Length: 80
Image 1 (cartoon, rainbow, N blue to C red):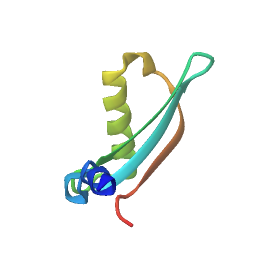
Image 2 (cartoon, rainbow, N blue to C red; image 1 turned 30 degrees about the vertical axis):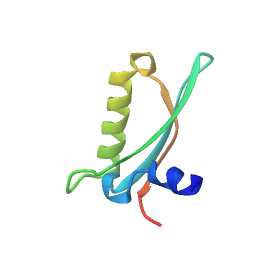
Image 3 (spheres, rainbow, N blue to C red; image 1 turned 90 degrees about the vertical axis):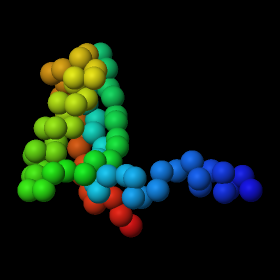
Image 4 (cartoon, rainbow, N blue to C red; image 1 turned 180 degrees about the vertical axis):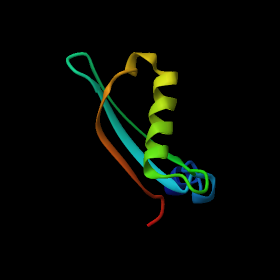
């Protein structure tokens, strides 16, 4: 029964974006932040478009990360 409760708390794939992303940003000597999520890019978007949109979204929500170095970025289809 606990397993069913845990499974029901995981969002269904249909409610998640089409792609899964992970990004690590660093302000040397001050802060390192790894974030992740899912997103469905608009038709015709490039990997660079998605990277820029995600980084801009993060820095607008977390101004301390403005100017941070990108240490890692991954974007892959959100399916097994």
